[in-house]
Amino acid sequence: MNIPGLFLLAVLAMSGAAHAERIKDIASIQGVRVNQLIGYGLVVGLDGTGDQTTQTPFTVQSITNMLTQMGVNLPPGTNMQLKNVAAVMVTAELPPFSQAGQGIDVTVSSIGNAKSLRGGTLVMTPLKGADGLVYAMAQGSLVVSGAGAAANGSSTQINHLGVGRIPAGATVERTVVTALGETGSINLELRQSDFTTASRVVDVVNERFGQGTARALNGRVIQVKTPVGESERVAFLGTIEGLGISPAQAMAKVIINARTGSVVMNRAVMLDPSAVSHGNLSVVISTEPVISQPAPFSKGETVVAAQSQIEIRQQPGEVMLLRGSASLADVVKALNSIGATPQDLLAILQALKASGALRAELEVI
Image (cartoon, rainbow, N blue to C red; front, side):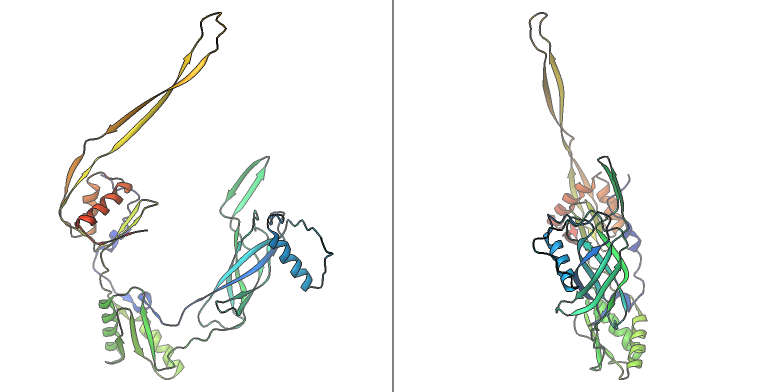
């Protein structure tokens, strides 16, 4: 019997023994992080696909303010019917150790009712951080991957036309100071908290650089002593990132997406012996037209009525024995043996968890 398509089996490849991973793949250095930037701007030069200004007054207001700053004063009460302008939000990520003059990519998203941003140009837009300071200035021509066409009331569209990208479209104007070992130590942060993995990282670092170099503060943070010189510190951290360790086996977990019906398990999931009854209940409603013809010369009218039949079908329930399993493959085979669909598996796994037969954490997203 084939396993349901939505039952994701990519994790089966993980059922083998744990392999060595680099520290840089499972941990990050505390303080070395990206910073989100955001700004409000205007995209001009659109081919009649901009905001409908009667419904987006902020676009007209933004254009008026921009023209005023450029020395163009519009007469009071001017009603501008703009079609080639769109109000947008500009977002970007400021990488760690970014320097003034460096280019970063930006994403431009329409916030009005513009039909398309294709062919538009973003006007100079300041990008601010969470502290309200300007860290970059964005400007340039948009790259929109979508395409659309319309004629005689018919239209077609490929991909999304309301969002575009500008590669290296923003220039960094302000740097973010990142402290990196000036106090004589740095903290490594595991991406997933695990005491066993943290202990193994400490052992690997101390074996390479000597006892006392690293110590675990908790299940996520490992404190590492660093050299004094900046160049030596960078080389030291590069060596640590390349060290390989064998992470501890993850906690048994089952992830269920109730919207799509997908179920994902890791290789630590086990199933105790249990019995499951699985049956299907279906309701069939069929409607047929019934035509009533009047007698000849009766001056009556033909009447069309509908006659419906409702039938409830229920397959007999079948109790299946699910034997205790010690691997993901066995769990999948046991659940698949009852012929359950992905939606049925959601209810079955929840019931198994409630009964205590499923030895794993169940998370519904």
